[in-house]
Length: 84
Image 1 (spheres, rainbow, N blue to C red):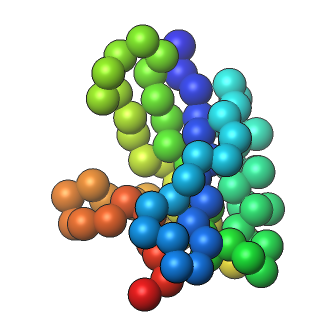
Image 2 (cartoon, rainbow, N blue to C red; image 1 turned 90 degrees about the horizontal axis):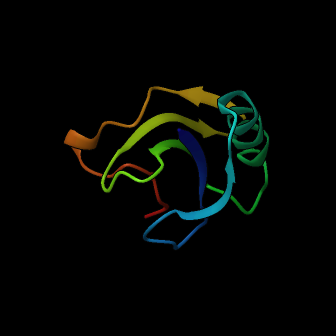
């Protein structure tokens, strides 16, 4: 079973905080897209988790200003952008 967490990052946050969890990927993506347009949010990301499996997470989507960006890459540094 999968769940989809929405992480939002705000200015001066070092790490994106989990804001809400969905059971449906489409709903999670729609929420993240909408949330990323809030003037107090730098970015919104969708991460898929496998329930009951430690460390089983997959970054799926990143939204900035209501637009999808390439999927975050765990091998190139930060999963979620922050304001520097």
